[in-house]
Image (cartoon, rainbow, N blue to C red; front, side, top):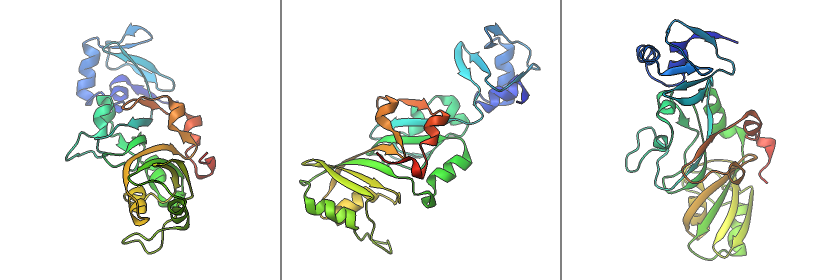
Amino acid sequence: MSKLPLPRILQSQGFGTRKWCQELIADGEVAIGGETVADHRAAFETDGLEFTVYGEPWRYREHIYIALNKPADYECSRKPSHHPGVLTLLPEQFRLRDVQPVGRLDHDTTGLLLMSDDGAFIHAQSSPKRHVPKLYVATTHDPVTPELIAQLLAGVKLHDEPAPLAAVTCRMIDTHRIEIVLEQGKYHQVKRMLAAAGNHCTALRRTQIGGLKLDLLDLAEGEWCYLDEAQLALLTPDSGSN
């Protein structure tokens, strides 16, 4: 456990500069255990600490790990160019504590997106060496055929890739939708693989990373939730894709 001055605690949680946090405390806007704390010199144990700012409840988290059900027309960028950024879907405090997307989904791709302020976690989850399976549902322009599924499983050659890329698994859902699992995470991979196989992707949704399934998180589009330790443990290569 660590005991920290309250302004430092608030600053670490994204409530502004140390000076601004001192002013929040002096203005009586911060409470712990239902009691207003007016002394900015007060220090508290951070483990399990719960507090309110402007009456809104918060819990101290050294790092935050988030799952977002990304809507279409949002960019996974801290400096979006043509559409709003996914960070606008989160509380301002998260942006101030440098929360970032883990990898990227195209602006028109929807579904499960991880976000965190833990650099080591972001790096580990983004590393191609981890081989974490990711499951997508792709809608195709032309009807799905057995030949298309066979091509995607056997591997297709993409421009600038030294070797063919193959799906881990791939199955037909209906006449114009497939479920495809990939490990590589290459740029526009599902769309490019479908194009290389002679079809075209008209919609794409990521529904699972490792063993973490979007439908079990019960998030509407644009909603987010914290991930607990059990859910984070599902984000491993051996946690399965089914």
